Length: 274
Image 1: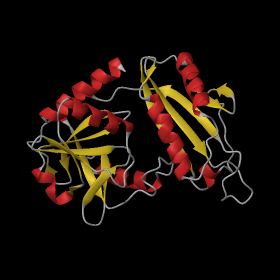
Image 2: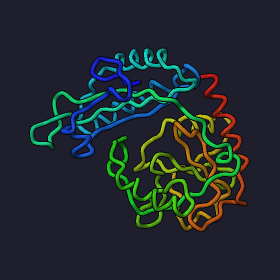
Image 3: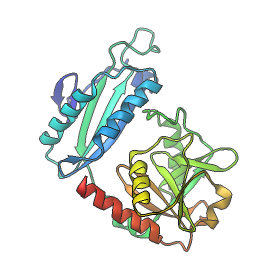
Image 4: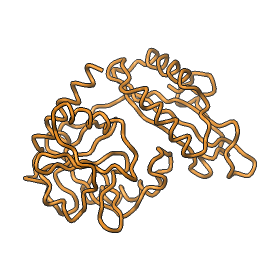
């Protein structure tokens, strides 16, 4: 189900022009959140980040925050799913030169079923690979994932579920769709520069404060991976996913760590209470 140009349409009915800058140039922004039952999680924060992405890309939001809140609320009520994923998307629209963003841009909101991920992912952890590919405009959530998709396909062949973006010195920034955390001597370690500040990351940092878990804001370097006790990544769809191996480095004892488990439990409690 999609809200497009003031109308509710099905996936098959929704259409944008082949001359839209999303098609021609991969130009656009989006944000993603999910519901737990009929409750959207951190909706205000996601809309605010959507507007910030628009600002960074020089775009004017097609809807006000109040309008988006109303559309999302209506969409959730219409949804027949137990849990619903929601994507806010705005593209550059159609322009004569195929390059300059239009004054009237394309905006739509997509509602679709949220599926549960395999329990093994959370119980046993996953493998990641590092890549020196760096995201363009990392502070904005853009629709251009071409390079990331190519790199992730290579990593998946090697048994990994995603890549971690690193710079030329080996500093780890983030995943293609997630934030990264290391744990060492009971302290959370996460980058805070040159990354997209995830909403799930924000909640995790609040939980860490509530649980008196210290946080250090710095890059984990690839050379230090084998010295970590635990690691995990976070995003709105997966929540918190333990990481047990990165490249050839085993993380801790290769099992899901106690702090990661504590954060997973506390985050789940937040999704029920918020």
